Length: 288
Image 1 (cartoon, helix red, strand yellow):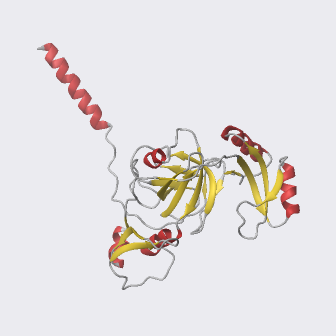
Image 2 (cartoon, rainbow, N blue to C red):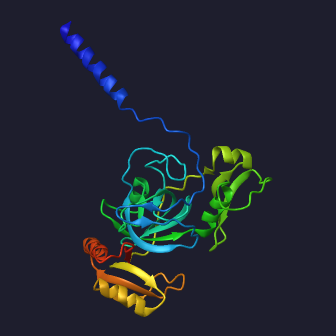
Image 3 (cartoon, rainbow, N blue to C red):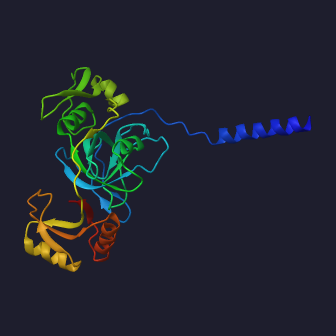
Protein backbone atom coordinates (compact mmCIF):
# COMPACT_ATOMS: atom_id res chain seq x y z
CA UNK A 1 0.00 0.00 0.00
CA UNK A 2 2.88 2.40 0.81
CA UNK A 3 4.43 1.64 -2.57
CA UNK A 4 1.14 2.37 -4.33
CA UNK A 5 0.81 5.61 -2.43
CA UNK A 6 4.30 6.65 -3.41
CA UNK A 7 3.64 5.84 -7.05
CA UNK A 8 0.32 7.67 -6.95
CA UNK A 9 1.94 10.66 -5.29
CA UNK A 10 4.71 10.65 -7.85
CA UNK A 11 2.23 10.59 -10.73
CA UNK A 12 0.25 13.40 -9.13
CA UNK A 13 3.45 15.41 -8.79
CA UNK A 14 4.28 14.85 -12.44
CA UNK A 15 0.78 15.93 -13.47
CA UNK A 16 0.97 19.04 -11.33
CA UNK A 17 4.43 19.85 -12.71
CA UNK A 18 3.18 19.43 -16.26
CA UNK A 19 0.20 21.67 -15.60
CA UNK A 20 2.50 24.34 -14.18
CA UNK A 21 4.59 24.34 -17.38
CA UNK A 22 1.75 24.56 -19.89
CA UNK A 23 2.17 27.13 -22.61
CA UNK A 24 0.27 30.35 -21.83
CA UNK A 25 -2.83 30.94 -23.89
CA UNK A 26 -2.25 33.26 -26.81
CA UNK A 27 -4.69 35.99 -27.82
CA UNK A 28 -6.56 35.50 -31.12
CA UNK A 29 -4.54 36.13 -34.25
CA UNK A 30 -5.17 39.55 -35.80
CA UNK A 31 -2.91 39.83 -38.87
CA UNK A 32 -2.48 43.41 -40.02
CA UNK A 33 -0.21 45.59 -42.12
CA UNK A 34 2.61 47.28 -40.21
CA UNK A 35 5.87 49.07 -40.91
CA UNK A 36 6.79 50.12 -37.40
CA UNK A 37 9.41 52.47 -36.03
CA UNK A 38 13.14 52.21 -35.61
CA UNK A 39 14.30 49.40 -33.35
CA UNK A 40 17.63 48.50 -31.79
CA UNK A 41 19.26 45.14 -32.41
CA UNK A 42 22.59 43.95 -31.08
CA UNK A 43 24.34 47.31 -31.08
CA UNK A 44 22.70 48.44 -34.32
CA UNK A 45 19.59 50.45 -35.13
CA UNK A 46 17.27 49.31 -37.93
CA UNK A 47 14.85 51.59 -39.76
CA UNK A 48 11.84 49.80 -41.31
CA UNK A 49 10.38 51.20 -44.52
CA UNK A 50 8.01 50.17 -47.28
CA UNK A 51 9.82 48.51 -50.21
CA UNK A 52 8.06 46.42 -52.85
CA UNK A 53 11.11 46.09 -55.11
CA UNK A 54 13.77 45.07 -52.61
CA UNK A 55 16.44 42.66 -53.81
CA UNK A 56 19.36 41.93 -51.51
CA UNK A 57 21.84 39.30 -50.45
CA UNK A 58 23.07 38.33 -47.02
CA UNK A 59 23.05 35.58 -44.44
CA UNK A 60 19.95 33.69 -43.31
CA UNK A 61 19.53 31.78 -40.04
CA UNK A 62 16.83 29.67 -38.41
CA UNK A 63 14.43 31.58 -36.17
CA UNK A 64 15.59 31.07 -32.62
CA UNK A 65 12.24 31.12 -30.79
CA UNK A 66 10.65 27.64 -31.01
CA UNK A 67 7.55 28.51 -28.97
CA UNK A 68 4.30 29.79 -30.51
CA UNK A 69 3.90 33.54 -30.06
CA UNK A 70 2.27 36.55 -31.70
CA UNK A 71 4.37 37.92 -34.54
CA UNK A 72 4.93 41.60 -35.28
CA UNK A 73 2.06 41.61 -37.80
CA UNK A 74 -0.36 39.80 -35.50
CA UNK A 75 -0.06 36.19 -36.69
CA UNK A 76 0.46 33.15 -34.48
CA UNK A 77 3.97 31.88 -35.16
CA UNK A 78 4.31 28.25 -36.16
CA UNK A 79 7.44 26.21 -36.75
CA UNK A 80 5.74 24.46 -39.67
CA UNK A 81 4.74 27.63 -41.52
CA UNK A 82 6.58 29.15 -44.47
CA UNK A 83 7.41 32.40 -42.71
CA UNK A 84 10.38 34.51 -41.75
CA UNK A 85 11.71 37.64 -40.07
CA UNK A 86 13.31 40.66 -41.73
CA UNK A 87 14.85 43.74 -40.17
CA UNK A 88 13.21 46.47 -42.27
CA UNK A 89 10.56 45.19 -44.72
CA UNK A 90 6.88 46.07 -44.36
CA UNK A 91 4.86 43.26 -42.79
CA UNK A 92 3.46 41.05 -44.14
CA UNK A 93 5.42 40.71 -47.37
CA UNK A 94 5.85 37.78 -49.75
CA UNK A 95 9.46 37.08 -50.76
CA UNK A 96 11.41 34.41 -52.58
CA UNK A 97 14.61 33.23 -50.93
CA UNK A 98 17.35 31.41 -52.84
CA UNK A 99 20.08 29.48 -51.04
CA UNK A 100 23.08 30.53 -53.12
CA UNK A 101 25.08 27.51 -51.93
CA UNK A 102 22.69 24.84 -53.25
CA UNK A 103 20.27 26.71 -55.53
CA UNK A 104 17.08 25.88 -53.63
CA UNK A 105 14.32 28.51 -53.69
CA UNK A 106 11.39 28.90 -51.30
CA UNK A 107 8.59 31.45 -50.97
CA UNK A 108 7.89 32.76 -47.50
CA UNK A 109 5.73 35.39 -45.86
CA UNK A 110 7.78 37.81 -43.79
CA UNK A 111 5.74 38.49 -40.66
CA UNK A 112 8.27 39.22 -37.93
CA UNK A 113 11.09 41.65 -37.07
CA UNK A 114 14.62 40.31 -36.83
CA UNK A 115 17.22 38.96 -36.71
CA UNK A 116 18.79 41.29 -34.16
CA UNK A 117 22.36 40.72 -35.39
CA UNK A 118 23.55 43.20 -38.03
CA UNK A 119 25.48 40.44 -39.78
CA UNK A 120 22.34 38.37 -40.40
CA UNK A 121 19.76 39.55 -42.92
CA UNK A 122 16.91 37.05 -42.57
CA UNK A 123 15.58 34.51 -40.08
CA UNK A 124 13.44 31.62 -41.37
CA UNK A 125 11.01 29.27 -39.66
CA UNK A 126 12.34 25.73 -39.10
CA UNK A 127 10.15 24.41 -41.94
CA UNK A 128 11.31 27.04 -44.44
CA UNK A 129 14.94 26.58 -43.39
CA UNK A 130 14.69 22.79 -43.81
CA UNK A 131 13.21 23.08 -47.30
CA UNK A 132 15.96 25.53 -48.20
CA UNK A 133 18.52 22.90 -47.21
CA UNK A 134 19.98 24.98 -44.38
CA UNK A 135 22.06 23.55 -41.56
CA UNK A 136 22.43 25.19 -38.15
CA UNK A 137 25.04 27.53 -39.69
CA UNK A 138 24.15 30.78 -41.50
CA UNK A 139 23.38 30.30 -45.19
CA UNK A 140 24.19 32.75 -48.01
CA UNK A 141 20.89 33.75 -49.61
CA UNK A 142 19.33 36.13 -52.11
CA UNK A 143 15.99 37.71 -51.18
CA UNK A 144 13.59 39.15 -53.77
CA UNK A 145 10.27 40.75 -52.81
CA UNK A 146 7.28 39.51 -54.80
CA UNK A 147 5.90 42.94 -55.69
CA UNK A 148 2.46 41.86 -56.89
CA UNK A 149 1.72 39.56 -53.93
CA UNK A 150 3.11 42.01 -51.37
CA UNK A 151 1.11 44.92 -52.75
CA UNK A 152 -2.03 42.77 -52.74
CA UNK A 153 -1.56 42.06 -49.03
CA UNK A 154 -0.95 45.73 -48.25
CA UNK A 155 -4.06 46.79 -50.15
CA UNK A 156 -6.15 44.16 -48.35
CA UNK A 157 -5.37 45.56 -44.92
CA UNK A 158 -7.30 48.46 -43.37
CA UNK A 159 -4.05 49.40 -41.60
CA UNK A 160 -2.16 50.14 -44.83
CA UNK A 161 -1.43 53.84 -45.59
CA UNK A 162 -4.11 54.45 -48.22
CA UNK A 163 -7.60 55.92 -48.52
CA UNK A 164 -10.30 53.64 -47.11
CA UNK A 165 -12.98 52.49 -49.54
CA UNK A 166 -16.10 51.93 -47.48
CA UNK A 167 -17.67 49.71 -50.12
CA UNK A 168 -14.69 47.35 -50.44
CA UNK A 169 -16.03 43.98 -51.62
CA UNK A 170 -15.82 40.80 -49.67
CA UNK A 171 -13.71 38.17 -51.40
CA UNK A 172 -10.29 36.74 -52.03
CA UNK A 173 -7.06 38.72 -52.15
CA UNK A 174 -5.39 37.82 -55.42
CA UNK A 175 -1.92 38.64 -56.72
CA UNK A 176 -1.17 38.73 -60.44
CA UNK A 177 2.39 37.66 -61.28
CA UNK A 178 4.39 40.24 -63.20
CA UNK A 179 6.28 37.55 -65.11
CA UNK A 180 3.93 34.93 -66.47
CA UNK A 181 0.52 36.33 -65.63
CA UNK A 182 -0.26 33.61 -63.07
CA UNK A 183 -2.73 34.60 -60.36
CA UNK A 184 -2.57 33.21 -56.83
CA UNK A 185 -4.55 33.71 -53.66
CA UNK A 186 -2.46 35.25 -50.89
CA UNK A 187 -5.24 36.01 -48.44
CA UNK A 188 -8.92 36.76 -47.96
CA UNK A 189 -10.59 40.09 -47.40
CA UNK A 190 -13.77 40.70 -45.44
CA UNK A 191 -15.82 43.90 -45.48
CA UNK A 192 -14.07 46.94 -44.02
CA UNK A 193 -15.82 46.87 -40.64
CA UNK A 194 -15.13 43.18 -40.09
CA UNK A 195 -11.50 43.41 -41.21
CA UNK A 196 -10.83 46.22 -38.75
CA UNK A 197 -12.08 43.98 -36.00
CA UNK A 198 -10.45 40.69 -37.01
CA UNK A 199 -7.52 41.70 -39.20
CA UNK A 200 -6.56 40.08 -42.48
CA UNK A 201 -7.11 36.42 -43.22
CA UNK A 202 -3.84 35.11 -44.63
CA UNK A 203 -3.36 32.01 -46.77
CA UNK A 204 -0.63 29.51 -45.84
CA UNK A 205 2.09 29.32 -48.46
CA UNK A 206 2.87 25.86 -49.93
CA UNK A 207 5.56 23.87 -48.15
CA UNK A 208 7.72 23.27 -51.19
CA UNK A 209 10.92 24.37 -52.87
CA UNK A 210 12.17 24.83 -56.42
CA UNK A 211 15.62 23.86 -57.59
CA UNK A 212 17.57 26.76 -59.06
CA UNK A 213 21.21 27.37 -59.81
CA UNK A 214 23.87 27.32 -57.11
CA UNK A 215 26.86 29.64 -57.37
CA UNK A 216 30.26 30.18 -55.77
CA UNK A 217 29.97 32.73 -52.96
CA UNK A 218 32.21 35.25 -51.27
CA UNK A 219 31.34 37.76 -48.58
CA UNK A 220 31.66 41.54 -48.46
CA UNK A 221 31.22 43.88 -45.52
CA UNK A 222 29.40 46.87 -47.00
CA UNK A 223 30.37 50.00 -45.09
CA UNK A 224 27.92 52.25 -46.92
CA UNK A 225 26.81 53.63 -50.27
CA UNK A 226 27.72 57.11 -51.53
CA UNK A 227 27.03 59.33 -54.52
CA UNK A 228 30.68 60.38 -54.90
CA UNK A 229 33.78 58.20 -55.12
CA UNK A 230 35.83 60.59 -52.98
CA UNK A 231 33.46 60.38 -50.02
CA UNK A 232 33.32 56.59 -50.34
CA UNK A 233 37.12 56.46 -50.34
CA UNK A 234 37.41 58.55 -47.16
CA UNK A 235 35.06 56.16 -45.36
CA UNK A 236 36.83 53.08 -46.71
CA UNK A 237 40.25 54.39 -45.72
CA UNK A 238 39.15 54.71 -42.10
CA UNK A 239 38.74 50.92 -41.95
CA UNK A 240 41.44 49.83 -44.38
CA UNK A 241 38.82 49.03 -47.02
CA UNK A 242 38.33 49.62 -50.72
CA UNK A 243 35.85 51.34 -53.03
CA UNK A 244 33.81 49.67 -55.77
CA UNK A 245 30.66 50.36 -57.83
CA UNK A 246 27.64 49.85 -55.59
CA UNK A 247 26.10 46.37 -55.66
CA UNK A 248 22.67 47.84 -54.83
CA UNK A 249 22.62 51.00 -56.92
CA UNK A 250 19.61 52.78 -55.48
CA UNK A 251 18.83 56.36 -54.44
CA UNK A 252 21.65 57.66 -56.65
CA UNK A 253 24.35 55.95 -54.56
CA UNK A 254 26.85 54.78 -57.16
CA UNK A 255 29.84 53.94 -54.99
CA UNK A 256 30.29 51.56 -52.08
CA UNK A 257 32.91 51.46 -49.37
CA UNK A 258 33.65 47.88 -48.40
CA UNK A 259 35.87 45.34 -46.69
CA UNK A 260 36.71 42.02 -48.28
CA UNK A 261 36.06 39.84 -50.12
CA UNK A 262 36.11 37.08 -47.50
CA UNK A 263 35.94 33.36 -48.12
CA UNK A 264 34.05 32.29 -44.99
CA UNK A 265 31.29 33.55 -42.71
CA UNK A 266 33.74 33.64 -39.81
CA UNK A 267 36.05 35.97 -41.74
CA UNK A 268 33.10 38.17 -42.72
CA UNK A 269 32.01 38.37 -39.07
CA UNK A 270 35.53 39.47 -38.15
CA UNK A 271 35.37 42.12 -40.87
CA UNK A 272 32.03 43.34 -39.52
CA UNK A 273 33.55 43.63 -36.04
CA UNK A 274 36.43 45.61 -37.55
CA UNK A 275 33.93 47.98 -39.18
CA UNK A 276 32.29 48.65 -35.84
CA UNK A 277 35.65 49.37 -34.22
CA UNK A 278 36.32 52.07 -36.83
CA UNK A 279 32.91 53.63 -36.25
CA UNK A 280 30.70 52.22 -39.05
CA UNK A 281 27.60 51.16 -37.09
CA UNK A 282 25.49 50.52 -40.19
CA UNK A 283 27.85 48.04 -41.87
CA UNK A 284 26.39 44.72 -43.00
CA UNK A 285 27.40 41.49 -44.68
CA UNK A 286 26.41 40.94 -48.31
CA UNK A 287 27.08 37.99 -50.62
CA UNK A 288 28.71 38.15 -54.04
